[in-house]
Image (spheres, rainbow, N blue to C red):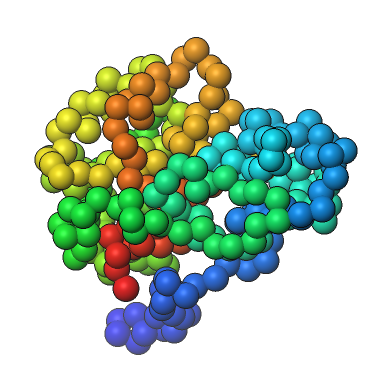
Length: 252
Ligand code: SF4
């Protein structure tokens, strides 16, 4: 029996990622985009024409990660002028910081000046979160589940999802917030004791994504709260989510 278990452990090897703060994702992952400074007006128009969500804007030319589906169509359309790096650290605390301008190649980060003081004083050691799938397609939800698996193991930092909002310190919203989930989302938020945090995980939660202009969405909730963390991606990678939470709560 014991030999059998040892054999299984040896076969599995070491599954957990030792240092999530320094972990990198192989080339090919679509992370933070970089736009060449010399992208021409014609190339800009080509990129705009293939973008399904209106994430690319002009005056000045820029790409809004809060609307980006990471489909890479723009990078295919103007090769060499828009490229996606494997930098997975995309979470920010200000919505406007998700906008990437031509010629910029700098990491995205949580701005400590806008993080509420109580977040760091109350949630610096442990953070329990209630996840609300508000019309999501289960992709972001699966990645959030993966954040707690044996590989990423965010529980090592005291970060966990809990079943009841009464036991939570905040909510993580996925999905574009459909009409039939808007009331449930509000009820869940109200049930979380204060102080509480709000995290938007995934492009759909941040902007509505491809459903942005759908009459079936009810996104008024987002306007009544000030989200503390924006985690872009379609879906966001577990490392993007975990490192964003760690930056927000100032964990080393
Ligand atoms: S990768 Fe983003 S910006 Fe580029 S075409 Fe797709 S949605 Fe638009």
